[in-house]
Image (cartoon, rainbow, N blue to C red; front, side, top):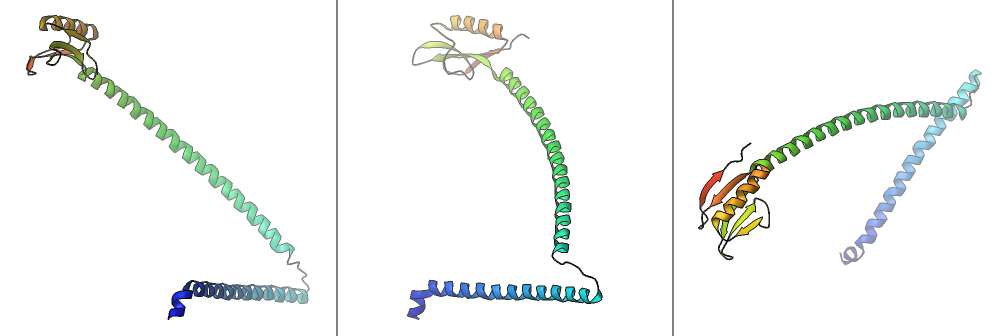
Length: 179
């Protein structure tokens, strides 16, 4: 058993080589029997008076078979190309339609969701006018009245809604854009 533990990879290789050799002999024997049967057929044809050159005949058949296979492959490829191009065209049209729809939907969302907000910044002790989605304030003011005036002008000029919050952050009022 120790021998098997040490040399098992070598034994596996030997077994694989033996299997390969056996397969070679089996296929070689099959090829020889095929060659023998073709030789017998040619001998029989010669005896009948029909002289046939076995070397040229299979080659001609192979050439015609190859040509017909190539023609079939070419037609299949052309058909598949046209099918693929039709599918690609359809997919591109669908994609452009969906892109257009998504762009329109995004624009509508932006129009609806964008608004100006007036809030109080406790740290800076200032009123802030800010557009939704913006990182920086549009304007900072000392009084709420001043901030409201600035926000109303900006909202009117861009046709956006205005939301005002109290000093504690609770909702106070909303003004819709006049469209």
